[in-house]
Image (cartoon, rainbow, N blue to C red; front, side):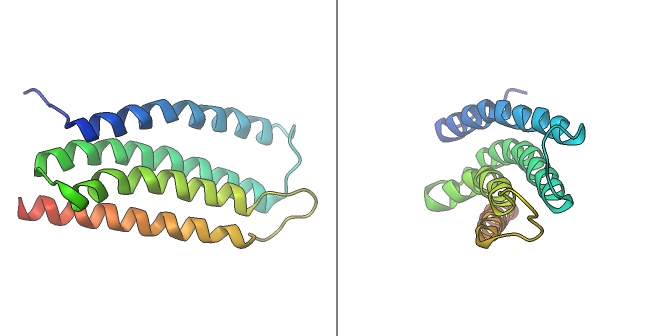
Length: 138
């Protein structure tokens, strides 16, 4: 069985795969945090782990969604949402965790940039619901 990606999925997959390098850098940074080389509050450590984990899991899911979206032959706006929703969520949710916990000193609560996490959650929901409906109706 040969899998052929649509041009849109091929571009998104290429960008997503290149983004894995940034996730690797984040993992390296987490090892510095774990060794105590980067001073952070418990809250900041937890949010750094959450941001890193969301990036890794959602990038993997995003690649799977590209293949599934091409299997449904979704096109137009629905096709765009089905293909880009999960990768966009990977960016937004991880960025939201990192940005909302940034700062020096005793940072113990997220700042207003935590709203970016919720935007990512909306992108994730839109992507998987659109793709799920597309798969069920294909």
